[in-house]
Amino acid sequence: MRRTLAVLMVAVTSMVALAFLVPLALIVRETAQTRAVAAAERQASALVPVLALTTRDADLGLAMARTEAGRRGLLAIHVKGGATAGAGRAPAAEVARAAEQTRASTVELGGGYVLLRPVALDGGRGAVIEVFVPADDLNRGVLTSWAVLTGVAVVLVLGSVLVGDRLGARVVRATRRLGTAATALGSGDLRERIYPDGPPELKAAATAFNAMANRVTHLLAAERELAADLSHRLRTPLTALKLSLDQLGPQAEPSRQALARLESEVTTIISAARRPARAASPFGGAYGASSSGGAYGVSCDAAEVLRERLTFWSALAEDQRRPWELVGATLPVRVPVAAGELTAVVDALLGNVFRHTPEGTAFSVTLHEGQDTVGVLVADAGPGIPDPAAALERGSSGSGSTGLGLDIARRLAESTGGVLRVDRSSLGGAQVQVWLRPEKVSKAALKEA
Image (cartoon, rainbow, N blue to C red):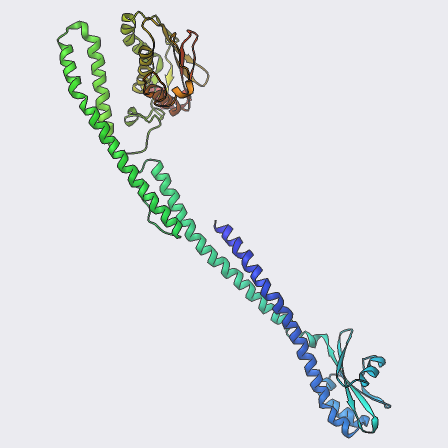
């Protein structure tokens, strides 16, 4: 911006300077020429009284010697019917033509101008006084004046550039501060504010930015409080459910384990909600408060997580007479996400299968390890998803679903540089594909594993 303003100031000031200085330079040259011709005419007029008294060559020579033009050899007197005193330069025809006139005239010659001043004498005689004005006398002081005018123009241009640069620097500083504050706020520093400075427009933008930052801070604080409050309200029914399960004996052990895990998740949500706001994790969910899914140094064995979760869901699948299959989870496969986050995604996808397909519908979970990606594919033999694009948007999956399950899976995939896809499965229903990029697993995590 500063460079653009400097170029603009140079262009504008140069055009203004040229618009004034070019005519002024021409006036200076014309004034110098007029001054030189006027000086020559004064010297010619000084010889008129001498010609009225005498036309002798000796007397005229003494009179011419008293003038500056005569001493420089630039003066001559042409007497009609007599000799010419001094060194004449004007052609005879021009001298004869000037003798017939009553006013002085000028004739341009090589190297200057000749002033011809006619003088009427007694007895019908006449004379012509010739004064040669060299080009140096015509342009005397012109170059100096032009140099001064050029210097003034340069000073004006430099001054305008300096003023434009100072104004541009003020605007650039205010703009950079606003950009830095916006970057800091976007990275999660909710304390970032900016002092309004610069032009009125940037001051208004800074004021609006501060208002926006305050609004965002208040909204996030209210959202955290609401999440913590709702999660805390779950503790009472969870406690009552736990007491009821304790009375059922050993056969309720799987339910007690699920309840314990649910209590752990509620505790995690409360802790994350109560924690001061900071930069959002790449995963962006509740688990992101404790560990970022895409962060370096965090990884887990996807095969182990899938085996554990399929063991848990197998009991419900057996009750509902659902055939199921786990493929590709025999060998360890490292993925750059925390085990808790991958567990939440698998549970959300399997929960969708159980909620949105009839009992007895088969499903499968496949772990696919490619060269630079790892895929977790959950397929079912249900009716499928009519609009996969809408299903990837929260609240648009239909069938009474909130769409959070697919949204959680999508954010986990994108946190590693991967992608979430929804397609038709070979079983005839829907297939949700969570593709992760394992190259984000840090060397330290692999060494630890």
